[in-house]
Amino acid sequence: MKVITTIASLNEALAPYRFSGASVGFVPTMGALHEGHATLVRQCVAENKVCVVSIFVNPTQFNNKEDLRLYPRTLETDCELLEQLGATFVFVPSEEEVYPETDTRVFDFGALDKVMEGRFRPGHFNGVAQVVSKLFEMVKPDTAYFGEKDFQQLAIVRAMVKQLDLPVRIVGVPIVREPSGLAMSSRNQRLLETEKISAAEIYRTLKKSVTMTDTYTPAQIIDSVINKINNVSGLCVEYYEIVDGNSLQSISSWQDSNYIVGCIAVFCGDVRLIDNIEYK
Image 1: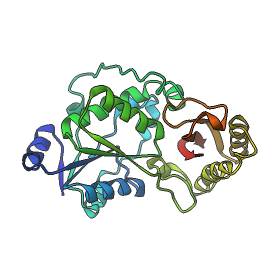
Image 2: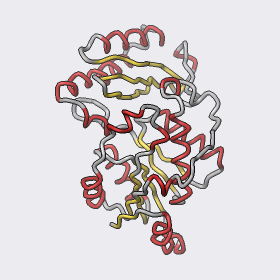
Image 3: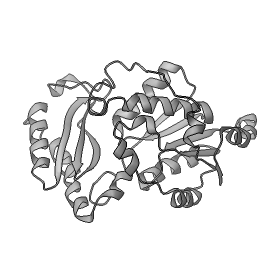
């Protein structure tokens, strides 16, 4: 495995593989890797001749400067893990390498980025689209892998690829959970052990809500989930929405869609956690 820090070196390293027609898989990350990332990398390694993993904490997708400052950075242990997993190249560019000049592009995703995360984190998805499109341009992968925990982000990336007509296949990989059910996230590193116990109630409550659809409407289940989680010490729900899994628009009836997903954001202390669950 080779660690690369510049676009020029990346192009040089990938050139012989591209020339031979070898498939290039790509896993973009912000580091602080965990088993969820490892699952993405394993699938990438299994399905491609070359596996490129990027580690770049992208400043343009943080609307909260304190969140950016506190985001965990563990490059040495990340690289050790990636070597064990069989990654071919780790791309660790500087901010100057990714943004030699300010990226002023503004993407129009219609209603996709106006709800849920987009409503509470203005500008976040534009930043995601900026950096992912730049990384795709640098790596030129055949396939890129994203975790389904970031459900709305996955929808945004797919929409961006379609808008820009990029020749890359996007693969969503199911959520990986801790034994307690808590969705794996780099932010979990900031949780105290007692907070992790509380945070496990998020998925437990979502899972229970799936069994209630014969009796309760989406609005009633939303109220129930929010109340139950808010009653757990240290937890505070920012939003819980039950939406059409494609349009991300709220539904009022279980008959409104054949693909229904519940998406949630919860503060556990000062750590913001997201999760989702499919209803049908």
